[in-house]
Image (cartoon, rainbow, N blue to C red; front, side, top):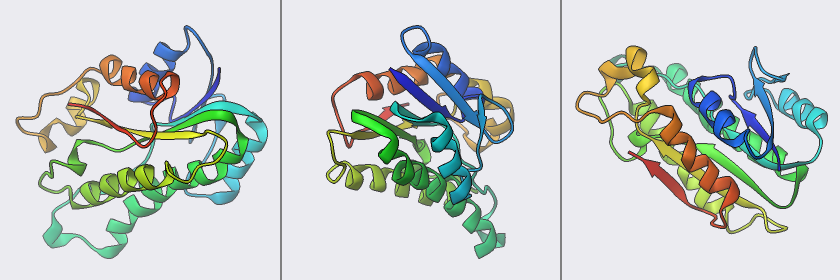
Length: 199
């Protein structure tokens, strides 16, 4: 299969590329690194990316920024960060990318454990991740040509504990390589509208 991993140069993305690269042709895209560069908050940038990649068998997104901070101090502008980036950015990838998928292709988006298990300073993350999962479930019943869509909801990744660990007291971390297996299930499996939880 020809697979595009957007966010493929990040911590989780590298693990996904590694596990899929053994059996498939994998292309990476990132904001500043990768085979192609893309800004998922910019419609024209996403369209240009798919124009360059051409037809694909699978699209994976392991990218998206969020705002972490106390609710008491949060502004609507800060909250909008996650809406425009991780939520609308991934929705944009799916809406534009579906036209470049071969029949029976797949889309895999990324949410996170906080969709179900809120944390302090994570109101934006919980809202965005829950919305990503809602989009996946709804899009699954409308996508044409046998195209499937799933989401992966990882717990905090072991390799990211230095930066994000303090936000997740008592949470069990998972190595990126273990989380990456859920993306293989999404790409190589048969299910659609599923959220694969790796907790």
